[in-house]
Amino acid sequence: KPVRTFDAVWAMDLLEQIPLNQATIYQSTFQSTAAIIIVKIPQSYVEQVWVDSMAQVGFPYSDALTSQLRQWAQEEEEEGHDWLASSLVVLLNPMVASLAEHSHLFMEHGCYGGRILAKDRKASTDPAFRRRECGVGKYPGAQHESSLPEEFRPIPLTAEMDHEWLNFMETQIGGLSLPHEQIHQRHARIQQHATYVSRLQFGKDPYPVPVEPFHGFWDIIWSRARNKSLVPDIMIRIQNHNFSDLPPVSTLLFPSYKAGVQTAEHKHLGKNGVEESTFLNAITDDKDFSDENLVWVADPGWGWSWNTWCQNLANAVRTTIVLRYEAKVNTRWPIFIVDFSDGAGRQRCLDVESLVGIDLVSYSARSITRNRGWLPLEEWVQFGYKVTKPEDYSYLKNVPRSVQGEKHYHHTPLPVRTDTVSEFRSVLNSNHKIGLPHPIEKLRR
Image (cartoon, rainbow, N blue to C red; front, side, top):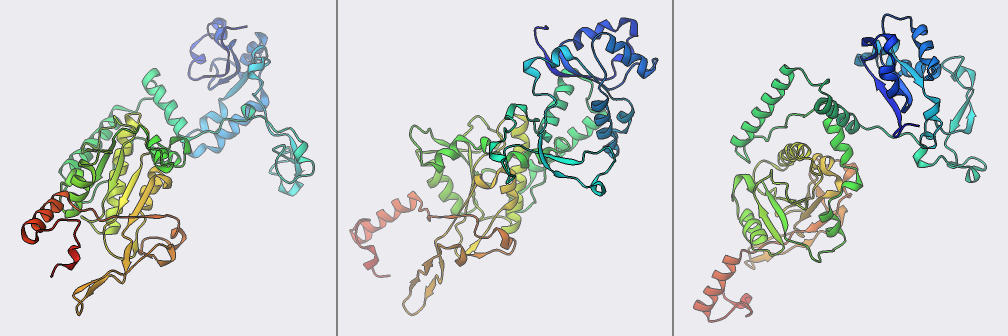
């Protein structure tokens, strides 16, 4: 028995380079695997002759598996895999396949799931009944059936697995690298994007969509956004109100981290909301991923319209996701969208939710939102009333009816700048000889 065995080996563009009389060069490797998938046999031999020679040394040919793989290759003909349909060969190694650690191979669900009528079969050789998963469903006696253990089920393949394999081949093997011209063009587009971002005027110029690192990248990101195991620890602690021994949370303010202070709200959030907080740590470098508990606080009160603001935030998130992915950092992080505007309008940045996950995007809005205004006769403010129910919200037009009411909107407190409070205290003391605790509402206006 070999020291280490494998489920399968994939031999591509190798065997045709080695004469049959020297087949022992690779046969010793085949002895450690249960299944051998050959992409191309030696062209100088008749396929049956070569197959027989391999069976002679303990690697029998599998007609069923060869036919299955060739059929799949034929079905993917539009992707350029049609040549595999005539060249794939599958051999088995019974000595290894019979070992307990490889008993999960060639498993499938085996409970009766009903007949398949002749008219519904694609070919005469197709089975006449359906197989179904044992132990599930409303079939009679299903509760007494033995379900296939998880370790015996096929591994679900994802686009991320494909990328990791290609990345391994490019970095470790070197045989699947992109042509130099394609690499050059991609680097040029990345540099062009970075140059544009460094020069764009936040709030005026549109934030560009970043260059896709590879085909299918965003499919991977959208899949990750639904992966509960990738929820950052900081979000779990926030949801559970567990803040014991929590160091100051790194906080990036969008868009003021790039545009600077443009409104009083930016000043409130930056100076009084983050900088003076003992619980938060303001950062301005969107490429700093040293703190895994980083959060974004996004303020839509300046720059672009509401709808385009969401799109620009989404593109900024996309750019950061690419950077985080390349830095091997979790591509999910909490984003809090804080709306200070008056009114009952409610927004949803659905693109942002799809990128980092609906569970990691939180919203807040002003509570005093209905019937708030100025009363000329009384010369005072009509405060209106709180909107607390989704049916009282007035959603913006870009929010589909199907998603309205899904998200809870936290209350947005109106921050008061500490320097304003200090100045106000000074005025009350010097002009009225009172302090902040006094009933200042009785002062003449």
